[in-house]
Image (cartoon, rainbow, N blue to C red):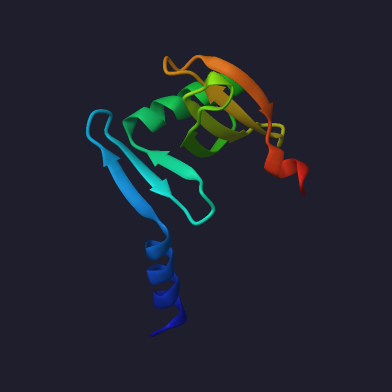
Length: 105
C-alpha cells in the first residue's frame, strides 16, 4: 500500500462522523478530541464569528460549552492575531479571547 493510501486510510480511521438530523450538522471527532463541525449551522456560526472580528480567516468551528457558549470559531484576524470567538445558541458573542494554542508557540 502506498504512503498516500496509508495516510488516507489512517485519517479516515481516526475520525468518527455523526450527522445530526435536526440541524444538518456533521460532527467529526478527531484523534485529539476536537469536535469540528460542518454544515449550515456551522456556516452561520462562522459568519457570526467573522462579523464579530471584522473579518479574517476562519480556521475551525466547533461545538463548545465553555463560558456558556454553544459554538467556538477560531479566527485569524486581518492583523494576523488568532482568537477564539465563543457564541451562544443565538449566535451572539459570549466572549472573544486569544487562542490558547498560539500562546504555546
